[in-house]
Image (cartoon, rainbow, N blue to C red; front, side, top):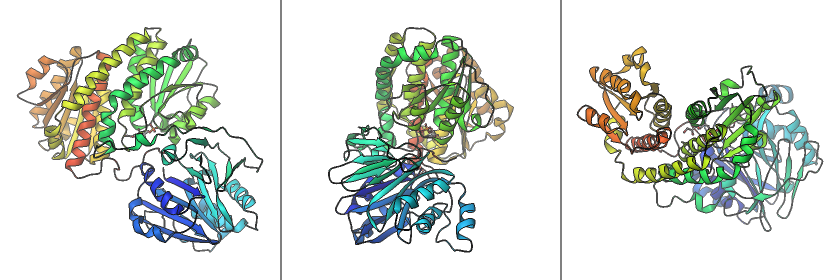
Length: 587
Ligand code: F6R
């Protein structure tokens, strides 16, 4: 959360930072700011609002070195004062993360001093100035040693034409240019600009000038960090004629499935080795990643007969999990940076367990911790709401479960390819307008299903509430009568997913119970007789028949399209829902 960028060695650096910050807005977008350094002094432009609100004003920021920030508020409301950069004395700072002991540091070092903002971050810039005696690196070292919590800090000092980056728990990368060097939170910010990057490790302090990058550890000993190819491609950041990233990314669901299959085949032997003899699996993740874990559970239990627990990472990490050498923990995360998931994985490693990461981010914190990685090849996901990464995760879990069960992975991949083709058609030809209209006019929307359909219902509900702000819940259809039915009236819509023939009559009961209470109903189904039976009573959305275990991929794109369209009808911004950000790197 929060996107940070630093550039040194580029004429008009502030303009370049502005352009790059826009590519990081998915990390936060409630306020933004840029500071530049020229002739030994800072110029600053920051305010509440999105990066574009800085607009014309940044033309007054001169110099070849600049830093910028796009914020997701943690401490202090979104406001001009709380926007970064924070400047004090000879230092300017942007910060991603949370300084947990900021109140204590403020009391200890600055008792009685009035700060300019309500942020935790301001204490960092004050400490830098406090410790500065002409030696910048020593001031940085002393400052970061005092900070408890998570941070990626990008620092300018007016005595030095360059940038300093300090990292602990929050992501920071360095990008290499010609006569210029760069830093950012994430690779997409440097797509098309730097072909090589370095992912900094916790404790690193990097010093960037226009022609050199030097990396130190926390004690200022020089360290060598690997340069890797920048995985983010500029072409992936293009909207390709779509009005929003969300629609573009839903359209990329088919290829996220096939590319994940292709990548999986190359890693399956290694994974088989890691999972040999496993008797229990715990799946953990947050939000959409957790929801894909619910589907994964069914795969491992049905194909391999291995018991699986699924826990949200934020809960799991604060329990005392029982981990033996026969337990595998599968940590699912699109970004590989989600704080709760990363900490859950660290906990498992500390307990001597095995961690398998299922992630779309090959160079993330999670991949460094994990014993083995199952790649999700969804490509860059920019929309805050996860779409193609969810279906990529389902594909990866399906193949992993086949591997654990000793079943034919090639046959599984074939089935996934054919579902991918069906998905293409479905996305192109589904008319979601009437159902979206029903939802947009509703006070509440309930997603119901049984077994795998229930798992998709949880995701449908998350997606809808996230980008339309309509109250919504996902329930097992059988639970309806145990409480939720009290909420049903003429102002509610229930979306019932029915793809399993053996369970269809039970879910149809739920439909009847809702109709009897005058609730509106839509049914997503691949069963002709269900569609026929209910067509006079409910709005029917038919999806094609496919392998029963893979129907979640098809129903997923329907609920994703539904959320997208409903969000548009309510004039929301589907790519940047209120209060949210992608990559939740704080607790
Ligand atoms: C919902 C959504 C979030 C993420 C969650 C975990 O659309 O995107 O619920 O799924 O924050 O993120 P990752 O997968 O990056 O760990």
